[in-house]
Image 1: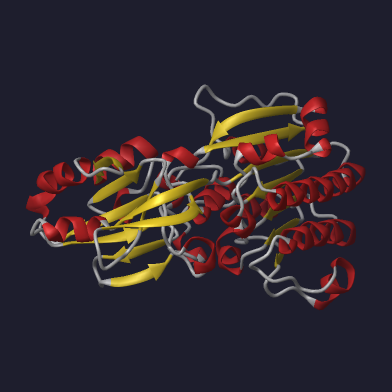
Image 2 (image 1 turned 60 degrees about the vertical axis):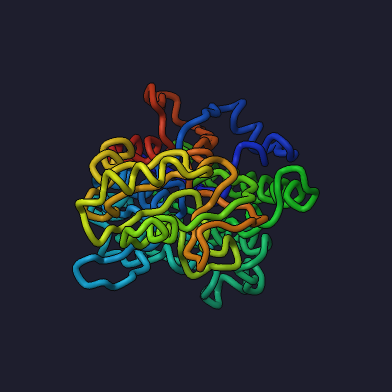
Length: 369
């Protein structure tokens, strides 16, 4: 099976309800539109790798954008393809004789989602031949970079005719503007127009090729920030919190998101720490490593002693104080886990009873022939 997969970073359903999207509406009419869940924690690296592997982190191993290696004490950006423990769609496709291509706005994703791909392009460092066709390089902290990426994907399609094409955007615009803002509506209308052109080109090239369009997570306004590590240290417990969302693109979210892993110096304090965290306003739940791994299909070896989940208005970060007021848009919690999924030219694709976005890639993997 040939497939085009487009992942809209930060594509909360509210944006598409507030914006004119005639092309996505056409895809829904000719195919199908579903409401599904993304993978928790609802952050970019976890969800892009879940998509490209068609599987949860318990299988592929990417549990955050960033993690603390407790064996070495080293803080690590989880960006290397060496962290990915499951075969990717591109690796499987290449083994089956398919031409493959991956395009990403963010450089940080390329080593993971590009594993096995014949062509890997990032909007942060585009090749000259693509800038001559798609236009000059755009600032990563802009909405224009996504429009460039979709034009570039169309150019790659027309030049190289890949059988498997994966395209993933960036969510700077969604972090900056809510669905009610004219800037967000204009951007999503422009995304829709470019998606329509790319899908039309894809269908012209591969009449039997499937199309799947989804998002990696939603996005909500936040008013309160907590540092679970400071909260616990104020009670005399030695603890360090690692924000799951932390990455190199700090302008987006200031490394503050709706989930965190907490590492305890003394494991005997686990029950006490969980009770303290659960009692704090803004913390919706605190799960032991085993509980978190079971509930969200995470790889237990790559999470903290505790996984802390925020309510819809709260984010976690690393701060000097336990709590402060903030005004930002972010993600990472279960409240940003509902996403849309469009499917075209895949008539027998039916999501499961507890549907997740990466099921569409699993569907393609099962039909690589």
